[in-house]
Length: 97
Image 1 (cartoon, rainbow, N blue to C red):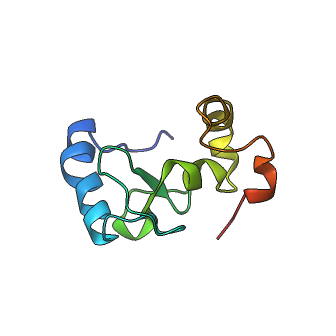
Image 2 (cartoon, helix red, strand yellow):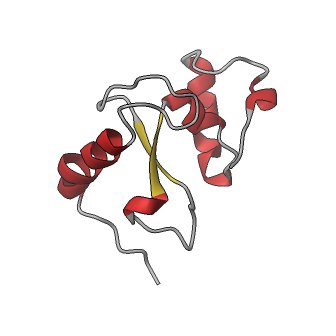
Image 3 (cartoon, rainbow, N blue to C red):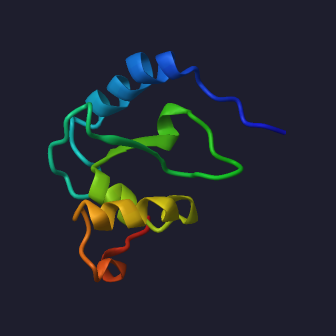
């Protein structure tokens, strides 16, 4: 059964700003300030059983989002390396909840 996705407009205009403000405009992992336009809204529980409930969402900076131990994030590694967001020895910085 396919997941129910929030309409893009609702996500951008309502959910992203709400989570970002709730998290005090900071990455919840490293605590640096992040712009609304640059922050990543992460699903704490991702995959098949994930949902868009506010308790399941958090603000992360790009670096922390890429380095989070989650198989759904593998596709972000190559681009983050190219953009020098993460170092070549990135594996030692991977984190999980």
